[in-house]
Image (cartoon, rainbow, N blue to C red; front, top):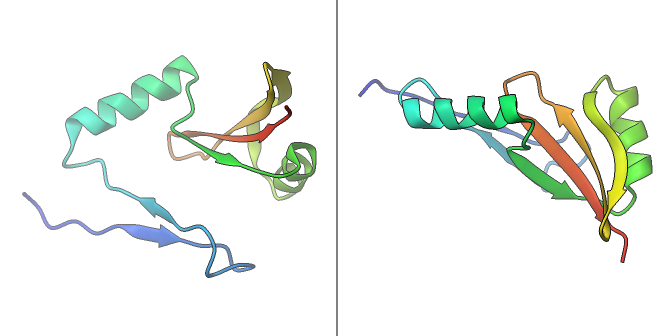
Length: 97
């Protein structure tokens, strides 16, 4: 197996907040296939709960995030889905009930 490294990403506004780890796919064909399948089927790879979905959607959109699903409400939750441009769909959601 080749030596690999990963990248950890944090917000400059909250460096002690949530941390994303971007795992390499090159050595894991099953993971690469899983991520591709989820993306092609429109299924988010991960999700983050937010307090105000409309405000977060607008903030992210203003930062240049491309949404594949604008906020929509369904059975006690309102959610939106974005494309991270690395082959993943990311969902943000807010509980409404």
